[in-house]
Image 1 (cartoon, rainbow, N blue to C red):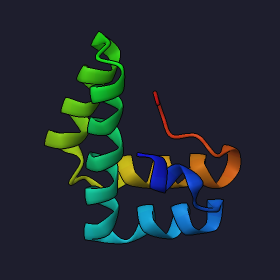
Image 2 (cartoon, rainbow, N blue to C red):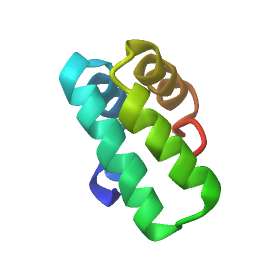
Image 3 (cartoon, helix red, strand yellow):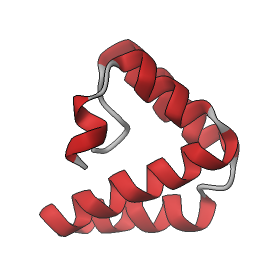
Image 4 (cartoon, rainbow, N blue to C red):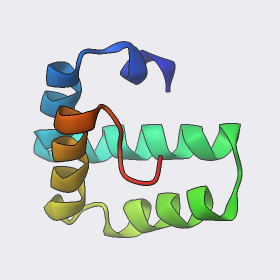
Amino acid sequence: MEWFDKQSNIVKFILLILPFVGWIMELLVRWSQVLKDASVLNIVVALVYTFLGWAWFLGLIDAILVLLGNKMLFL
C-alpha cells in the first residue's frame, strides 16, 4: 500500500497501535503485498494476520518494528 509507505514512522506507529485501525491497516498492507507478490510466505503471513490479527501482540510487534526500522515483519 503506497499511501502507508509514504507516511512517517510516527504516523505508521500510531496507525498500527490503535486497536481496530491497526488491524485494518495490517490487513490492507498485507493483502496489497500479496496482490503485488503472491509468494507462499506473503500468502501465509497474510492469512495468519487475517485470522490471528485480532490478537493485539501481532500489531504491537509490527508497530515496534516500524518505529525502529521502518519495516513490518515479513514484508
